[in-house]
Length: 109
Image 1 (tube, helix red, strand yellow):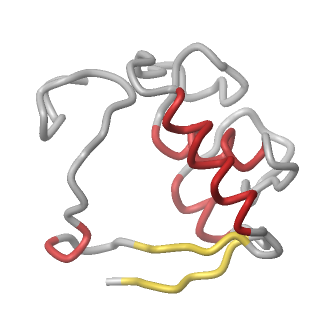
Image 2 (cartoon, helix red, strand yellow):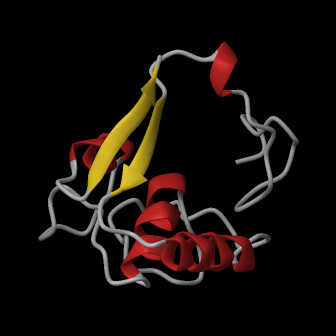
Image 3 (cartoon, rainbow, N blue to C red):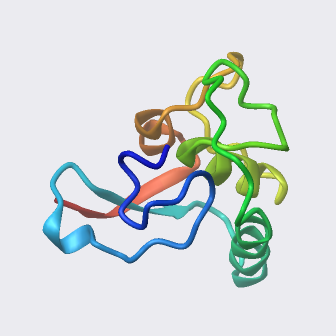
């Protein structure tokens, strides 16, 4: 949604890293992931730049549009690691990714 986008664009975009100036922020490691898996997950996410924003939060399975935590989940799902806390629903929220048994917090503010 362009109204809240710091660069005025909709959908999956490159954004500046502004973690230091924010609150309620988490940096996560994915447990058991190799460097190759990190590289491939990042590559998957990068390949989706320009994809539209997924306004249907109840469909995490979409591969044509994405919301933020859905894209992170899908990128890791492609690597064989499910980072969703509640694995049996159709939504993945940021806090579900934080609470997942497959992630660990390395940074919080």
